[in-house]
Length: 524
Ligand code: ADP
Image (tube, rainbow, N blue to C red; front, side, top):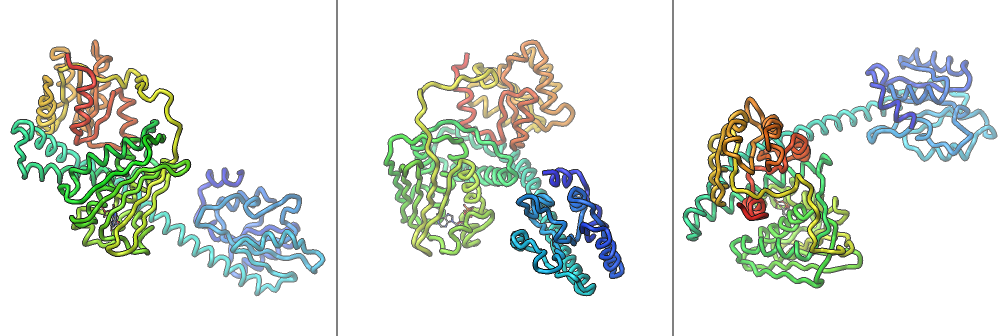
């Protein structure tokens, strides 16, 4: 532990990174070795005890030259005990000078050390030439390890940049999407549902776009460990049924034969309904994408011991055996041309695996090969049935639902504000739209809204400052204030909650979210 602590505190210096750390019990041996190595151009450092060795390893070392007598004999030591755990790329080379004469050697201890890679033994009396060449080899090996470390660092940096880029990209795409979604919805409501095919096509494509953006963001969040499940005890049978029924109409205009078989009435699990919904809708969507129109899609929900098992099976293009595990890797597609033609970017299954794993479950793909159909099997650990399943959990003040008709929308983007306002008005609400925080503070006392939607990224007074100032107005504390933003990462949700928002909706806000919000209590 000590070594890990000191490793965390010390920033290695480049000139230390190729040193030979020498540890022998007698100062004379150490001085002789040092002299020989320095003459050969190797830089050295003599360590007096284990503590010093640990400290110097943490500062940086090319290899360790150690006399067998210096090994700790009094406990069941391993190399890790001696210098502490190493990073994944590191395997610090060690050259061990064996005691003179067979009888002197501690064979049990040596056998244990022998198991470690990157360890070399030199019999004493050691020839100067063989000692120097063994240490030079060890340092060359260490250089290669540093190369791996640098490549890993570069990969991590590139990966972080990619995640940041995806977050910004998704944010920028969400604003125009919000406008398009709102416009479609308003058009549908005002025209009545006259089966306008073009409008339906735009709506379907927009939903697809929104899904791809959501998936991209989620998968980058999972890879950074930044996803938090909102778990509740839920009935998986109902959840799969909802996803199936919701998805069934949308799947390629309903041309496949689709069937849902449920072999248990209720299967309770602890899960996040939104995320699991995403998993099953991705699987269903894929089944439809990769199955010709005449094919069949079968979904079954069963119980297997302590697990709930959901199987999504199709009679489509199938998956070659060597791709069965790889399809879960991000950006992997069996047939790029086919994947793209079907509107995919190779993220859905990676997300599904990440989410199922976060739930303590497992996902697996099976297929008989090309054109033999595919089967995706999701297993999730079962929980006990809830004691009183129909009693709604008590909500705290922040979770209480809005119940009144006047709604204020604050957004600096004129078009986004206008269309969000019109969308909300189409639910029968009385709406005012303002372009910024300062204006909102003026309007609220006069208009007396009960619900306020605030964009976060606004010039001048941003959304966070706006909500803080609104809360200070008389009655501001009891207003229902929602953030409406393109930013939708876990830290964004935390930040808006801290600033005083009751809810955080991600653009484009879903019609169902608005319906839930407005329908929760009858408007006065
Ligand atoms: P995509 O956006 O490409 O569909 P996914 O991560 O959802 O990305 O799937 C990765 C790849 O796995 C797909 O491109 C496809 O090659 C293959 N795949 C997924 N589901 C199926 C299926 N039901 N049948 C055949 N191949 C599938």
